[in-house]
Length: 253
Image 1 (cartoon, rainbow, N blue to C red):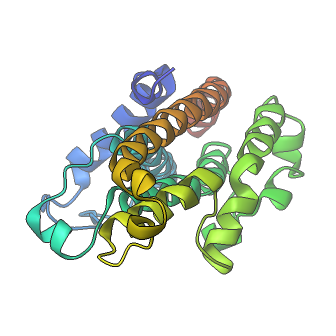
Image 2 (cartoon, helix red, strand yellow):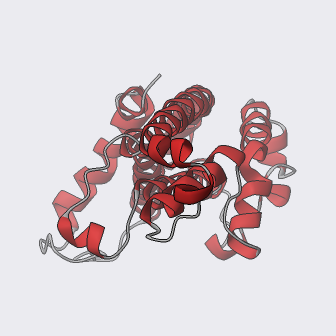
């Protein structure tokens, strides 16, 4: 399961087509505006269709970023400027691993916004919270409650790590920490290993290369597997959203 499968899902194609149709008919034609306005006030059905389309686009964009993040791990090609400013393979990996972990936790908010829009719950976007949505009568009595709880459970894998990164300090992991030490020693002109353990000092570049490859391969496998689980669960949510989308739209007509 890849993000392309979500983009090509019937719910995505139908909801996107409906929203684009409204933008094409009454949307302002300035393609470079961050937020496109409309030439007239939208009716309730049009607002519903545009709202669903917008939430869907933001969700799919995040899913694409999570998928792309896996490939970023193995695509480090430092420029002269990067080398000059001290950007190393370690700092690059550290940044991208932290970035992936943080972005995973945005997924529940994007999903809740989409579900709120599709089910037409009429909740202020600033007041959309999981604990409130999951007990809402229209959600609790529907099939979507189960995959929502499943998604929340999946995301808990990185919830504590995300909170630690945001509120306390850098992501800590043994192999990354070891790579940081290797990188520091290699770049240190006064590397104490040159006198204390010259064999190890000489072998540091090879050890660093091997450890880097190990971290990249393990992280890519872990994140790819996690993305698969996420996207499969989102597909379940899309299946239910498609049915609800058709019902709500029909009720407007």
